[in-house]
Length: 126
Ligand SMILES: [Zn+2]
Image (cartoon, rainbow, N blue to C red; front, top):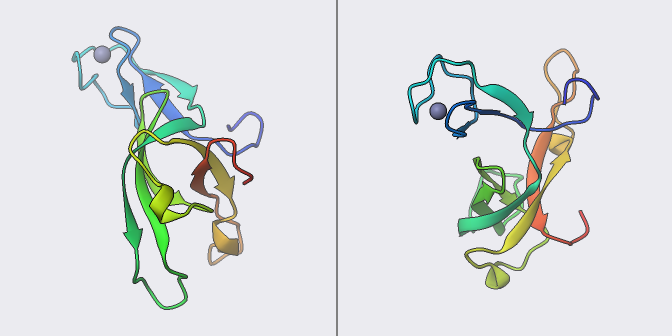
């Protein structure tokens, strides 16, 4: 979050109907309210909606890995990699946690670090 310097994901919640969005639209997509949605820090818990085991990727990207769609408990849906998991143990509804990282050490052309994220099974070591 910007105030603490800790990485986080910001969502927006409609003050009138409670719909959750990843951006701040001019009007709520659910109820058309023009009251500006309120920003909130999205929680780091969620559940697997679906996943795929990726067997081939770009050169230098270690495979296999699991790519998944996750419904976060706060209402947003994200796509990301699930690390440290046996693809055979994946399942719909599996609880996972969002973990922030340094995007593999990647940096912008001017040297600033990127912030990335991935998922781990809930309760697993990061
Ligand atoms: Zn609304």
